[in-house]
Picture 1: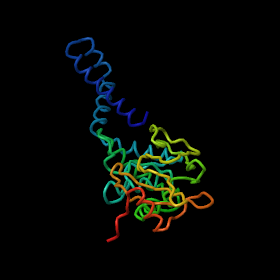
Picture 2 (picture 1 turned 180 degrees about the vertical axis):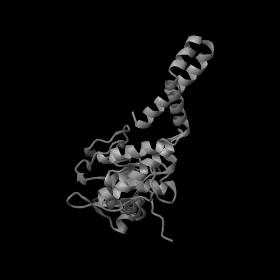
Picture 3 (picture 1 turned 90 degrees about the vertical axis):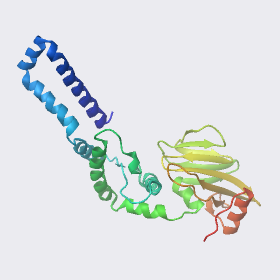
Amino acid sequence: MTPMFLIYLGGVCLTLTLVLALLIAPFSRRFRERLGADARKFWALVILVAAFWLTPWGWPVGYASAMWDVAKGRFFIYEIPLKGENGERRAVANELQIRFGVDSLGSACGFGTLPQDDEYDRGYDRVMLAALPAHFGRDIIKECNQSASKPRTAAEWLSFYFQSVKSTPTGLELGVPERPGWWLKIDGGELERVPSGQIRLSRKAEFLGKFAYFRLSLLSLEGRDFVVFESLPWRGISAGEPQVAAISSDGKAVEATPEQETAVLASLGLAKAKPD
């Protein structure tokens, strides 16, 4: 249970206790006498309930929670402080998660709806945004924003998401690091959790993460093996053009030539948009 949930639970219980006391008091002389004898406790309850509903207690709770997480080496951001569309910020969130293990909500629409959630998130982010450059030695949000805005080839995307990519006699073998909350579908099978370690596919696989959704297809053309990388639309991130990586003689994914890419995409009935 999170600190916010516990505080909300405690505040609601205190409020119900106060309401119950006020409802009972007019009908019970004995209860009124007990309230009079313990007036300090009653007024302390009133003050706590008023503070719960009327003061911005979420900010210091978020501040303290972030300090605790930083001390434990856990890094999270509620809102990435960048201008632009939510899809752009989620692309940066994908970079932060994959490259640095910093999770986030990716955009402002992730803020909660309970009274103090916004204050909590702001207090938390104030600490965390100061702790990130101190921990990593540079502005990783700016770095990820720059890298997210640059185009990548299919071979670069494969090296971005996987520790290794290797061709085998039966298909493709991918070395997958630990990806909590990621899912995949192999060769048209069921959607299941991504295990860390080696994943083998014979023809096609779809990977679904918090800020990424892409499909890999393995095919042969003129005696060469190729991998088609397709970025699919997901959570505000628009689909990307299909891209092709070639499999080298030693079984690794390398850059495909423009002619190879055009031929492979044409064999699948796909094509890249022509530059303006």
